[in-house]
Length: 189
Image 1 (cartoon, rainbow, N blue to C red):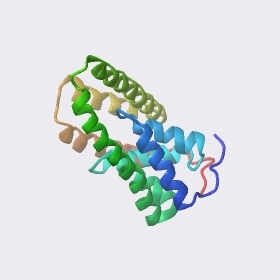
Image 2 (cartoon, rainbow, N blue to C red):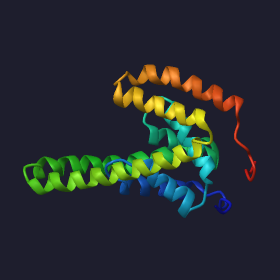
Image 3 (tube, rainbow, N blue to C red):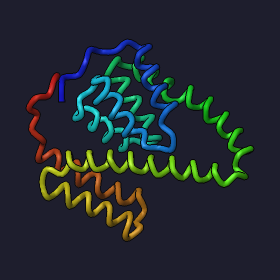
Image 4 (tube, helix red, strand yellow):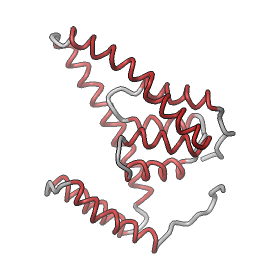
């Protein structure tokens, strides 16, 4: 992956996040964000993005808003965080209000539900792609793979409460990562 491009101004950050917020229907936002900020704009490298995604998922709140805060902060500090969140939320909020009003009128038509199911399937695909990419990066030895498998089984197969799974798996994963840090070759300061 090539080196990240120069630091964008606040207006560019707002517009980029507004684009993401307005064009990412049905979920899968982190996949869109990876594509936009790492692959297209090259404002971050993939390792930075995935580190931010990990942090965003660890904190309470909406993951993509947490990720917007992190990316904005990484690019332009506190102002970047504020502008990123506003860009992500405000334009999409107005569209969502309009869409909810429109859906109230269109919900009686079968085609409306078919379209929404298609959008949902695409969003699941984007989320799966993001999960596979993150898993490949994290699976550098048997222990992280075992932790991922245990978390998956605990939540999916055994239907254990997410909070308890996180309270056990997160410290185990953090301890493993602290004792076995990844190589930092090629990272910028």
